[in-house]
Length: 159
Image 1 (cartoon, helix red, strand yellow):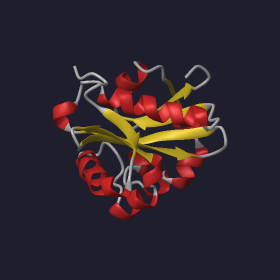
Image 2: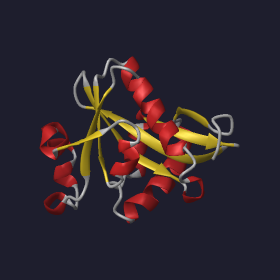
Image 3: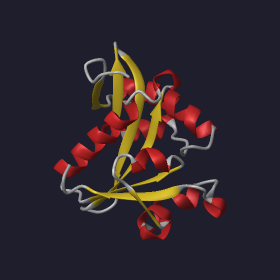
Image 4: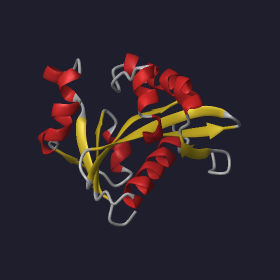
């Protein structure tokens, strides 16, 4: 397993956009996450975090604010050779830290990997708990009528 000394987690920069798009597009092609266009990534670059090792981007995730107290962690993707080495956990941890600093009380995810998020303290809820998400993003999703993602939530009081 990698140590935190091996990896830097930081806010993404514009120069990271192509790497983020490359990593996330592999997950999107498999149907694990929504495809993000390069323009969408650039437009939202300050909401992305990257994991970097020796100058190479090996993972990323983003945050999306819905209300003053509700946000989503999304677009979590890690290069295959670095999976199961703690990179995803570090990215989610950084996202939660920033959300907590912003005063967000509740964070949610829509995921096909519920076991991962369970291990981080999330619990399963009904997707209908987040009508804001459904109206903003789900209406454009190719899985709209057959969504197989699991909604999960975590309270950030103790982060």
